[in-house]
Structure formats: C-alpha cells, structure tokens
Length: 353
Image 1 (cartoon, rainbow, N blue to C red):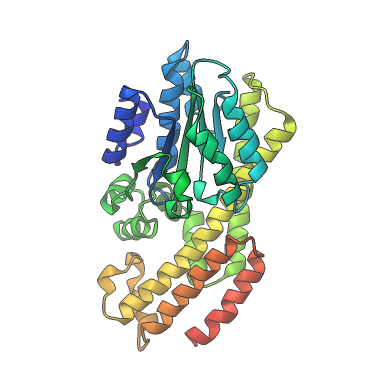
Image 2: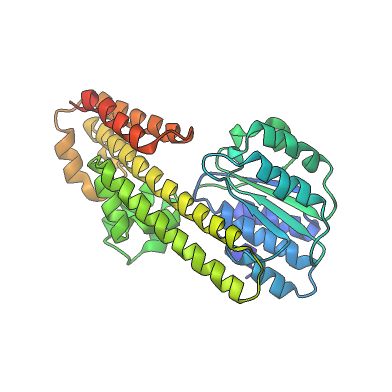
C-alpha cells in the first residue's frame, strides 16, 4: 500500500481522485476541502510526497523526506498561518516568488497552503497569476475547512478534492479498547470525526479539559492550553534539532520561529476545543431538556445532563451554545482571549440563571 493509499483509507472519493491525478500527471493546483479532522493534511503531505518522488533520482528517499513533519525536503514548501491569518509578505515570498525558482533537486516543487481560508483577500488576489500561469514544475495544494471563505476566482482555478467527515463508527473502531465503550462513543461524537482529537479526549489531559470546559472554568482551560502549547513547542524544537544533526540547514532563528509557531498553533487548538466542548454540553442540555437525549454527544454523562436539564427550557442552553460559538469566532479577530472568556461568563450568567 502506498503512502497516499494508507493516508486516504477512509476517504475513497479523495483517494480515487488523487490516484487518478498521479496516474495522468498532476494538475498545477488543487483545493482539498472538507471538515476539520477529515484527513486533508496527511493526504496533502502524502500527495506532495508522491509528486516529488515522481521526478527524483532516488524516489524512495525523496518520498521519505517529504513525509516528515516538518519536512526537510527543499522542494516542499508548507505554509501555515501565523495566528489568525497568513501573513501577506510570507505568501508573496515563500509561494508566489518561490514558485518561479527551479527545483533544488528532482523535477517538481510543491507548495501547500494549510488553512487557506485564512488567506487575506490581498494574498488571494496576489496568488491568481501563479494559479493561472504556473511554471510547469510547480504544484499548489490548498487545504481548507471553510472553502466558502475563499475568493471564487481562487477556488475556480483549483481542482477540487472532496473530504468527508470520518464516520463515527470508524473512530470508535480505531479507539476500541482504549477506554470504556461509553466514553469512546462520547469522544467519537465530540471529535466530529477527528481521530487525533478523539484520542486526546481520552487522555488524562483531555478528560481534564473536558471537565473544566463543562464547568466553565476558563482559567483552568487556558492553563491546559498553555501547557499543550509548551509541549508542542518543545517537541518541534527536538525534531528540528534532529534534522540539524542530520545535516539539514536551517538558521537558529528560523528554527526557533518554527517551534514557536507550532506551540502557538497547539495552544489555539486546545483553547478552541475547550470552547467547542462547552458548546456541545449546552447542545446536549437542550436536547435532553427537549426529550431527545438519544442525540446527545456526551453519552457517558447522561445522568449529569438529566440532572441539569430537569425543569429547564431548551431555549436557555441553546442560547448559551450560541454565545460560546460567538466567542470562538471572536478569537479569529485576535481579541484578547482572557477578556473574551471573562465577557463570555458575564453573557452566560443571565441566560443560565
């Protein structure tokens, strides 16, 4: 089984489309679109690895290096947003200008833009020429969980590749034996088909995050997010040091910046997960209060849901869930997280009184 097949096992439509693209010769631009956790990132890396291997003197070695994360392959450029949005200058320098340079080795260069919906309009407009008239050796892969936020002129110039959420039963099977069945069922539903997120929810830190989010203990949620960010930054530094020892050249400043970005991304992800878990709890409260507990995500905490929902109108928890989701959107505007969470508590108080 190839790396591409292995990383698209539960995405048959995407696997078929990408395998056909490799057989016929890949197009210049692709848009991988689908929900978070559907496997776009690993599929994008595997697809990029196959493209780079196809014109390499040593295909196996090129594929191996391209599959590493972060990758030391000089012809694979992977762009992730710094904060809420991609920096315009970084897009211009690392993608638009770099796409005109010949490959350092082999015959291909691949540019992957993760969270493409975080591209500013200025960056998207600047990308148009590269998308319209790319050099024959350059291939662009855009990954997006919210493709509707992309300009139509950008999306229309990319070959779409569809990703569906992983089925709940697939996540449950993958986690079988790692926790009690009811807890696995809850994690699979709360993760929205994201296996890594489901596994996190079954860990000690994930269980604590879930408990604190339900209690609306935002100070504890922030502390958990900080700890996760520090752990991710440390792991990234170790990986980069290993690459440096293996001979891959990268300045100390670039390595430090990359490690810090990994930490910030992880911190943001965990904090957002805390808010999502709180919103899911309120959603379940509304369902139980409305007599529809069979659709609850928190399957392992039905007794607590029943107790809180007793005598409660479904409208109150429904409104509370909306307020939590509104706070998640505010984070995209780079507002102060501490202030936003304090404001959320004040907004929730009269709703839940």
